[in-house]
Amino acid sequence: MGDRKSVISAYAYGMSRFMKFLKDNNDVSNVENFDKLLSFSTKKITAVLRDYVFYLNSHVKGVSVRTYLNGPNLFFTMNDKIWNDKLTKKSIHGDDGSELLGIMVTKTGSQSYYVKHDKVTSNFSGLSWDFP
Image 1: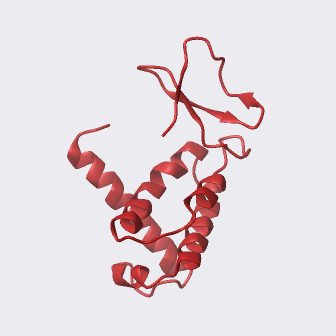
Image 2: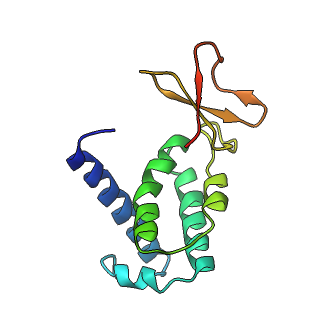
């Protein structure tokens, strides 16, 4: 994980992108109206997060979608809002357009790999399972 300032900056950037998406879709009238998000029901939160994931799937690489979701996820978590996080995460697609199962395989000091359907994006030698 990076230093504190860069982590905060990444969360803030992810949240600002999410708010812009909501404004463009008429879910909020002002990108600084965070209180409006607190009035969303569980179903509404799940729906807007899934819509955002579908939007991101067509605009950024698959593993980047999770990074952009960190801000909104933290916002809803810290405000005790409940949504179907599993359904949202299952909507994320891999870089090749296939659905990710959400299981991350890591190699210490190296990049992460994801298990997709019945195949793995890299071989298993020297890898360890990392369940979030």
